[in-house]
Every structure is written in structure tokens, then in C-alpha cells.
Length: 414
Image (tube, rainbow, N blue to C red):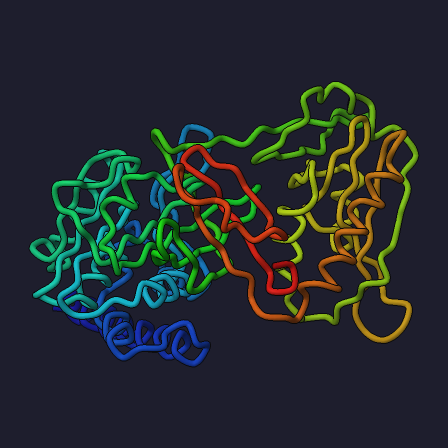
């Protein structure tokens, strides 16, 4: 009898925490529609988390919950953070009776989608990993959504053509490209929501058709586990060891240097600095700066550092974005603003041509400040192979992909 009481109390506590999460998502603007709010109040997220996950962890608005790791401990499947799940469902503009393809299965997000589209709608969730699909299918069945969601094993590159067209395709893994199958299976007035990687920077972008290409209607900052299968795109990582064998890692999603050996011993050179005069107050977002650098700074890369390196000891004075120029590299740095509150952006660099690398980074930071900062949000577009590219904006950042081009246009740049 005592055990039943405990289970009942736990169930009541789960409802309270779930409602508190939903209240927060609504207050923060992550949820904007009644139908999505009802879904979040209804679906028991904790039942899709690994056994033993505390309710406070399962219902944390900002954190994902890992459900599978590879042999190296890298997360390859997870229940995404509630805030981005809410935003992506809102981005998709879903309603009752719609047909949805979810790429990447965890179970919980598919259950939310089923609540949103209702009994007259249709949800298909696909994943390439049989362990993931088996788990998702079992959890959906246990939570009462076994008949509301069809779980399919397959490579996302090909979609599910036999069930097309879809009013929405929602991708819940990080994609480097947009397979043509997704375009073929998307209804003419449908929405594709995809966490798209552009030179290592990811945005959840809602795309709709415009003539022969796709144009964004919204974009959200996000991060997801990487796509597996035919659409997988591995980044290239170069290690720059210091005198103690610890390393700074340069991570290239695209445009890796042809001769990385030129950087051998670069950390032993004298460090140089350059400062931009561009400042930002504490607490003010500048995530579009990263996107600008990824689009307009050739040689752009992301950084990771081992503990014990000089950069690790200087955390708080730099950001993990940089640029390589031959035998030198620079990275985005900050220092206390000379006037007023906040910090000033700049660059620190190593190598014989470090000053040139630092200058390139600083100049693009200044260009972002002049031409994009504080203005209207950029527009993203996907131009599939065969589309009329004479219509590309001349000032757009361009990211070549296997199946086409991705462009980012800031209003001030065209």
C-alpha cells in the first residue's frame, strides 16, 4: 500500500513539474500557441527519459537528456531540450489533421507532435539506429501513443516516400545538407524545420518554398547531435600541441587548410593581439557575430582546448571561434571595454603571420557591427541543384553543399 502512495505522489509531482515547465516556456515566448501548450501539459516527458532520471532533470527547460552514447562516450541520441522542441514545433506551424515526418526518434517529441496534429493527423518518426527506433516504439506504446505515431527504421537521406507528401518535416538531428528527398516529400505549402550546420554554426531554420528554392520564415539558435548515415558530414580536427603535450584543437566543418603541417609549433611563437573597438554590454546576445564570421571569414574554424593549456587557463577572455591563415591562426577574444560597461571584441593570434590573421578577424567583426548588428534578422535560403541561381543576393554568404547552396542574406548586405 505504501508503494502505491509513493507512486501516486510521484505522479502528482510530475504533473506539477510538467506544468511549471510549460508555464516557463510560455512566459519565455518559446510556446506561443494554445495547441502546443496543451501538448506540453499533456505528454509525460519523464517517461521518455532513461530510468532513474530525476524529474527536475527530465523537465529542465534548457537541457537535453542523453539516451545513447557511442564507445567514446559521445552522445548520439537524446531527448532534446524542451525549449528548442517547443520552438521547432511552433516553427512548423502545425495544426490538427496535418501529416508530419520527424527525422530522429526519441519518442517524446513525436508524442508532442501527435498531440498537436490530433487523431485526424499523422506522425511518422524515423531513425537510422534500430536500438533507437525500438526504444522509441516501446516508450510511445507505454505512454499511450502507440497508435498515434508510426516509427520507421531508415536513413534520413531518403525520407519516407511511400507516406509523402508531408505538411511538415521536422529534423531533430544536426544536418549539414538538405537531401533532395526532403524537398520531394514536402507538400507544396509545407514547412521544413531543420537544424542546419553552416561552417560549424547551427540554426534551426523553418523553410518554405519560393519558386524553385527554399526561403526561411524563422531561425533559432540551437545545437543537436550529428546526423548519421548517408547525410553524415564529419568535421576535420587538427591538433596544435603545446610544449607539455596538451593541445588546442582546430575544428573545421568546411574549408580545412590544405597543408595543416604549416601550423606545427605555432603555439611556441609569440602571441599578438588586435582590437576592434566594437563593444557589447554584459548579457546582450551577439550570436549573429558567429554566423557572420562563419559566412564571411575564409579559414573560419571552431576551437576546443585541453585542460592545462594557456587558453584553458584564460577562459572568460575568448570565444571558441577562429581563423587560419597559412602558418598562423587567430581566435576571437574580449577585454574589458575602455569606456562604459561590457567588453570589447578583438583577436589574439599565434604564428609568423598572426597579425594578418588577427586583422582579418577584427575587420569582419567591424563589418558585422556596421552592416548587420542590431538590424533585421538575416534570411536563409537553400538553392537545390538545378535552381535558378542568378537570383542569389550578391552580398550573401554562400555555403556550398552536396545538394545545392545555402545562403544567408542580411538586409544591409543584399
